Length: 326
Image 1 (tube, rainbow, N blue to C red):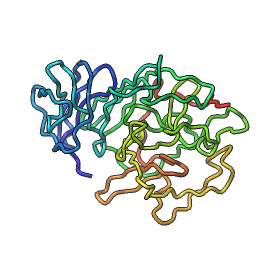
Image 2 (image 1 turned 30 degrees about the vertical axis):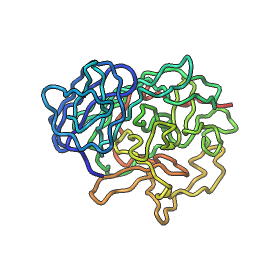
Image 3 (image 1 turned 90 degrees about the vertical axis):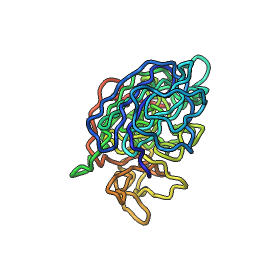
Image 4 (image 1 turned 120 degrees about the vertical axis):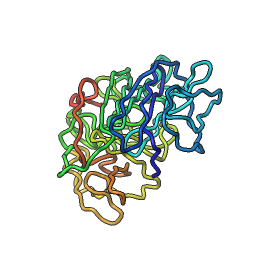
C-alpha cells in the first residue's frame, strides 16, 4: 500500500474537527493542533494525489469533494470541511459520517474526532452507529464517551499477548466503534463466554449492545451499509491496522474442535494451514510491517496482540462482564 507523505487531520460526524500536524512517516517531531469548525465533510475523491506538506494556513475550496489538498482542514467559504482524515499505521482513511442516516429517530448521530501526530493517534467517539439500530440483546443503545489513544508506529513485541481473558475493547473501527474479542460475558449461563457469531446474536454489521447500552463489534463486515470499505477497517490497541479481507482470501488458522456455545476459546484450536494467518489473525508483510485481517471464522478480528497494547481508561476500558442477550 502506498503511504502518503503526511500524517493527518481531522474528524467525522458532528462536532469538532481536529487538524493534525503534517509530517513524513519518519518525522517524530510533529504535534497535533485543533480547530473548531462546522463539520460537514464529504468522502475524498479517490483520484486525488497524495497531499503535500501542510501550509501555515488552510486551503479553501467550494467543491463538495476533496482535491489534492494539503493535510490540514480544507474548508469552504461557509467554513464547511470537505476532507476526511488520513492517519495511523498504514494511513487509514477515517470516513465521512455527516450524511449517514444514523441509528434511527430519537438517537444521536455519530460524532467522532481523530487527532494524530506522527507518533500518536487519538480518537474520541460517542459510540453511535451510522446505520439503523436492530436490537439483538435486551440492552438499549445510548451515546458513550469513548477516547482511545494508540501509537502510529507499532512494533512487533518479543512475544504475543493473549486476549483470552480480555472482557472489553481490543480494537476500534475507523467509524469510532469498539471491537471486542470472540466471546461473550457470563450471562446468560447457558451461553457463558460463548462465541457470539456461533450463537447468532449479532446484527448484519457484526455488532450488538452491551449492558451499558454500548454498541460494539465482535466481528466486522466491511460493507458500505456499515460505513466501512475494503481497506483498513480499524486499529488494534497495539497500534497495528486491521485490514478487510475481500473474498476472505486469508484464512483463520483456527479450527472448531468443540462446542462454541459456551467458552469459545476452549472450542477452537489453532492449527495453521494453507493461506492461514498466524495465531493473532495477522501476518508480517514483505516490508517488515504487520497487519491483522478480518476473517470469516474465529477469531474474526484478532486472536492475540502481536504488539504491545496501550492501556486505555474510562469508558474505552469498560468490561463486558455483565453483558447479556436473552
